[in-house]
Amino acid sequence: MRIGIVADTHIPGVARELPPQVAWAFEGVDLILHTGDIFVTSCLDWLEGIAPVLAVEWIGSAQFDGDPRVAGMRVLSLDGHSIGMIHDLMMPGMWDEVWPGTIAARYPPGDSLSASLSKVFGSVVDIVAFGHTHRALVEEHQGILFVNPGSPTLPRQVRQLGTVAILDLTPEGRKARIVDLSGLGPASGSR
Image (cartoon, rainbow, N blue to C red; front, side, top):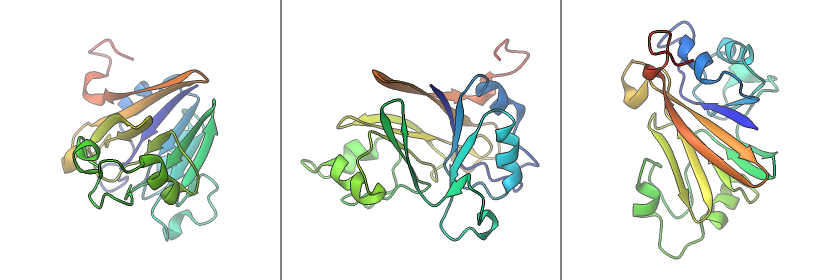
């Protein structure tokens, strides 16, 4: 199963809709996960033109009340993997935002990431998809794969083409990669 992951789209604050490079990056995906800061349902509708969408958003986001695509937090079972989805990943034992390198540098030595994440998600997960920081990240710690796709529209809080992620799942394994949208397009030959 191939999954596209996107976060921090901030539509319509930064643009009317997502850039076409997102559709090119997600060509052929089976599912799209949006890990928050969506702002409007039309963003999810646009993504749903590519593949089915599941999303998380801050609790109390009234504009998504009743939208079955959106929850405050999710745990998905796909191809033998348990994926925890949340917008702002705040783990017990580490009170910093999760940026590239912070888990290795600041998570308490000897503590179980699985136990901490079970407190967040209410069950054991082996993959965590999150957003909020606008910084792309793919890291594995204690057997758990962490994926933050960054932002396609506002990476590092700068209005420009950014990043999304692709997660490939099989019952035997999982692999994630970050896709730099600035490298996609008709001129580059990538599609």
